[in-house]
Image (cartoon, rainbow, N blue to C red; front, side, top):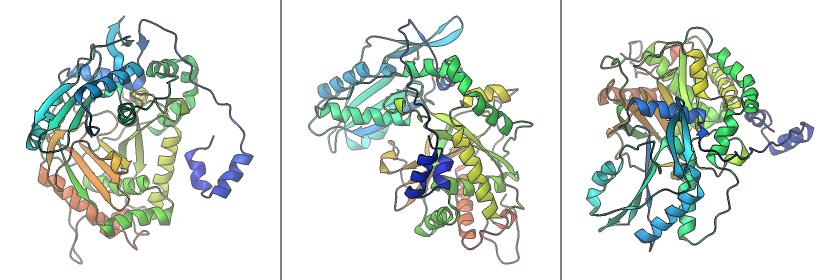
Length: 470
């Protein structure tokens, strides 16, 4: 078993092969199948989503909508049969949620009613249809999946797919799409050995809980003492109860700006994720005037090989805590952030929900626990948003679970960024200004990696001038 840190320290195939030969072998332990029961325990991630949905049962905040092209020559009956086969194949699509003895549980149904919705539209009607298609799910009723077949009179037919996050994640969406096209093409699917309930029972087992003790100690030590609260300059007072109304703006880094990010990677041995995160955390420090910065980051959490083809909610959240002291040289901060990130990834299986339960003493209903800002990096064109964000610099209304969420997408030749924000806290022009500050930081970096963070400006200043960005 090699850790991510080993790959950085042995960064050639030859050195890695030598490491493998010298390393002790570890026994591979498969996830066992669960016994048949009337109901099963929830995973840690499911528990949190179930609780959040109970706060607002009519919310679509945790829906996972998407759009995929309808297979050429397909019809609604063919699509329906393929999805019925997928529902029979994956228990997550036949799962509902209930409360037994005051504890939420999941029930697996042998069969569930399902039909594909049908729409016939003109191309310009698609945004309206998409908006109406995304509706609240009743977690007590399976399937927590809906599909719509859209015949577009002046374009290609499309499929609308919506699932609740409690039964799905990004990898699950990809599995659903891949297997759907295989079924429509008449291909056979490899039988599944495991289902999601097997994972949730395994995760809750005493043996697995014991394995997590070492990881728990790491996270508890990281968040010992007073927890930092990020104080970004908002345009409106923070409401007593957190709202999820939001918007998103997209921008693409120029070739020069992207080269700065990639140059940091090459010169300092960082991943693209670490390089972008370093710039983002410095921006947050400059905006807030704080040096103890915590940023949340989603992680697939499917390190066990048995879980690769299973549909369900596996995503965990890492709370990346970094010390952005202004007196530090930028190069030194990069190495510190690299270590912090590697440590977080090595302890990624400890559930964020468990960490919150252990370290958050009083819940602030106006904020998320531990952090209010997220960062994520996705790779390749397949990761593009199913709901187009529109033109660059256009603010598209939607939802925002956090104050700010920066998502970067590596398209190979370019880096595309999306900044999602709470419209209850920020005006669009403020977010546009944050984007300008981000770009200005990138201009400050070439040739200045040995400068202190204090000396990096987020404003384009005239010589001899200093001023506050706020």
